[in-house]
Image 1 (cartoon, rainbow, N blue to C red):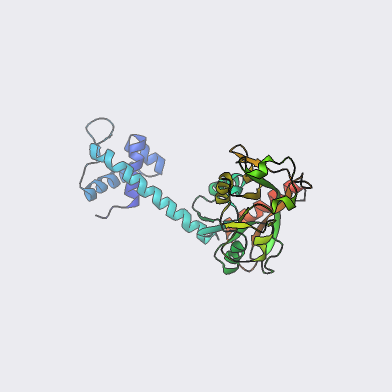
Image 2 (cartoon, one colour; image 1 turned 30 degrees about the vertical axis):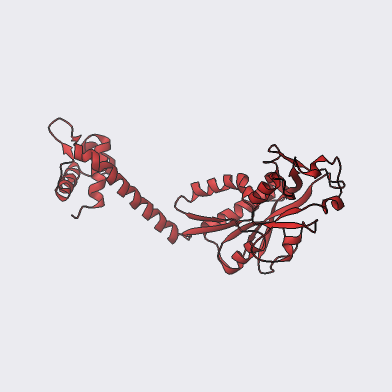
Length: 299
């Protein structure tokens, strides 16, 4: 069985166009070549693909069953060609992106939709490491780009660009004793357990927003939020994440001197020594351009 892509293309075109002559016009070939290609395909497959009794050929039962398979093979071949073309043009086979906090996805998801449309053959790996874990992935070359919260200290080998600002909110369950207070100070928070996000590596950054001597360390904002909801402590969370929960038995704490929430920057991170492919470079430049539009900097 040695059927060719040309034979499958002729089969597909004839089925879609309704005649061998129309298929020939679509493919830019002589009608005799189309007829011969389909006849040879029928010999190779051992079935009749068309009934030829009438004026126009009609798909046989076997032809109707095999047509979707032929179309799928041709589509896969087009995909193979597209991937190969992208690789020879400098497009990477896979782009690996690390994002600190999955709650960034509402705004980042819009950009990933654009990326998918521009590079349809690109494979994406999206990881959600926390704090120092993200830097380690970039330093090791495990990921290509990172989006993280601004850190007090960071590796000098990495490059950074500020993307946006987010606010931090103090939140607690409605059933927690702190929720009954009309005004609070940071000192009052020290008497209650704090729930904090942590990565898998120790470092100074994990202590950055610690206000209580009593802490539960939790890997992931969603897990912290669930523990807050159960009244197991209070937490300081990004506003775009905390806002999702303020109507779910969770309230914002009125901290004196913090009427305006704490500001925390979100930044793009990459390793200058690790070159990016076309897709990674496009994503990096688009993120920087969009951030400059927000901040008013020249793009």
